[in-house]
Length: 204
Image 1 (cartoon, one colour):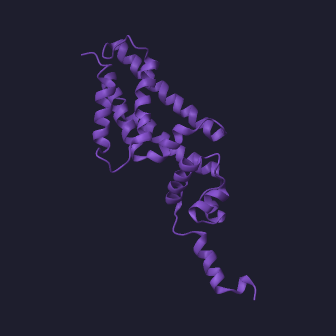
Image 2 (cartoon, rainbow, N blue to C red; image 1 turned 180 degrees about the vertical axis):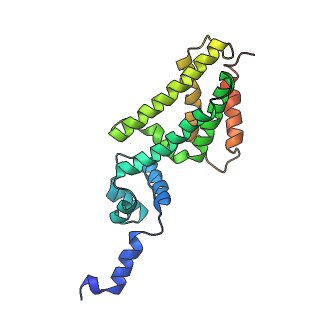
Image 3 (tube, one colour; image 1 turned 120 degrees about the vertical axis):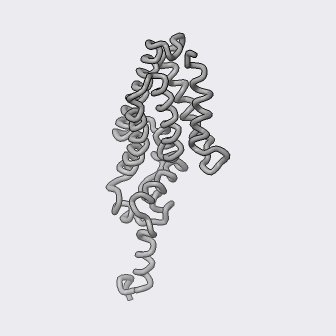
């Protein structure tokens, strides 16, 4: 008797094909695999094997591995860019504090996606577009620091671009050690980052 007429075999294929993953949960699971094994080193076949899926189940939600990456990076970048928008209507020093606080919140809320963003190196068009958006974000923060310097609310003896790199070096390092559910929640973590990061920049 052929496999096509084997009810048990058909049920097994159906069970393995898509075990409860919707698009969101599949994206989250794929990002976890990319962070663990490396995006470049993870083929669609390897991803399917890690998740217990068929390749067809992945292609049901995403057209390619690159689309999964683009969606995850877009989530992280949309969050960071939204922080800039939310900080538009305040003095520069307050806006800078709002941006840092918001960046920490985005990092905590989207820790796996931000971790993936910080690891891309521009090896594909998707990664290069993401890096372009990240650079634009950094440039906007640098302009904000410079505006604060010109208005006298931020110390001017530190180069604005260097200050931005140092500030976000601190923020971005959180992905290496922060674990949700620990002693500090996002709000407390943001408060600590602001205390350490900005006290040396603000003019009192």
